[in-house]
Image (cartoon, rainbow, N blue to C red):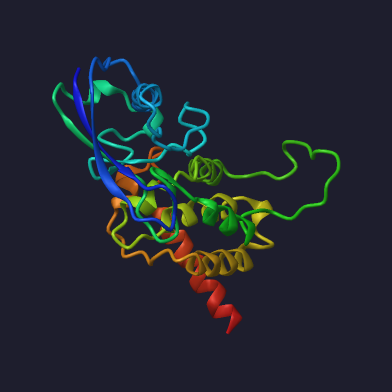
Length: 247
């Protein structure tokens, strides 16, 4: 398979960037998208050119580091992570445009790599449960109804990749934020800090420059873990409750 790649190149966060075209040949349909970029970088290195910077870690769809905009879609044409996208999703002769996440909360570091530390600061603001350390409690010590446990587990599958932000016209991280809020809100251990948590995390979300949610739904359409949009409803409900009782 022969492809034409149009890749965003930017030497650092303060420099201007541009799209650069690279032809690539003999691409196997069994390659992952990142493996294809590895092949390109090997060629660029051999030619004495600067390789394309992009994020990756586990390459198993778990860590959330690999996000790219591919032909204008977060993670590309399949609902999966970029590292799990395979070249059989493309056709011989295709032109593939590759860009970093585009959001004020994710500044470009270099080429396709962005700074996702805003998500870490949101978690630091309240995405945890404060408990005393010591021996682990018995598994049945805090009974959780199956419906709540299932919803908490579904929300906890969020890998913080940022695709929801990249896809949202408002640059909102509400799906990510809603997943983190819902995960703990469904469990008894999360109740003591439930409303201070939502106030602090939403405040940090706004400080990081992420936009507001208008329920367009682009976030769920690209989420590789298929986080349901109703976690945003839980976020909004808890926020209203917290504001009402604070007043």
